[in-house]
Image (cartoon, rainbow, N blue to C red; front, side, top):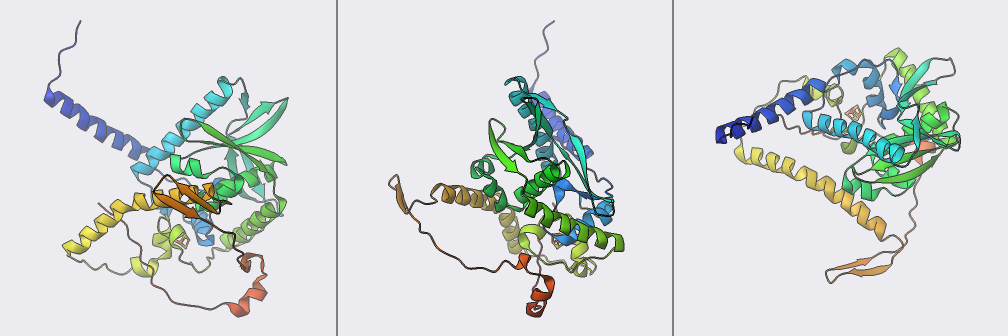
Length: 329
Ligand code: SF4
């Protein structure tokens, strides 16, 4: 039996239904989970974050529906990649989402995690971690060194290193996807990096047991979108807020939000393009761009490698104002 024709009102109400329902489905998936130990996929660069993530998991600011949609797409893409590489290439994925634990010297589980799976190759299982990302990030990552460029990708490195270490494996693969195609990046176990991560986790674990926190240090690239910033910036959040009615200021804030995606796109493109021109001293692109480059030696002190007692006499306190802007509507 043929269906009746829909009119404008039907189409319009269907559109509204899809938008509302999709939002409510996404919102229904957003939640917090109790944590007893650190999570290997979330070894953050901030010590405060690490401690809040376990001690204050129930106060973590919930992410929004947009980010949930990205997580969902990433999970779906993991299945798609397994299908493309597994089913279509005839390779077998085993031990998918296999859990692993990291223990301290006292045998306590201080971190736990999962790896996406292993591919059977000549009778041996090669660990693989699948990461999907947008086109700009995908283009930017061509080697393991490129993972070091952003806090999020540095977390991926730590996760893989902990997995390799925890399972006594020499090497694994990152499979990165732009939702259409893949790049394969070889990762080898780096003992010195693992020792650094483990020593840090053990130190943080002892702080977690005592419930102590270090003094938060404001770093825009980490703090501005941190789900625990309201706990760190308590001085501000415990005082009553000022209400300012200033349309021009509100417009500027709105415009600032609109420009935000362009900033991150600019940064990604800038890194990708500059990586393309590495070791090329002089080039023209079409008739519009001239690109020059030269090798420069920079001297720096690796403060992370310095023992605390050596650093202590040079420690100085400076005051700065931390301004965090969050769009609430
Ligand atoms: S707001 Fe900044 S200092 Fe505080 S937990 Fe987050 S990243 Fe760390």
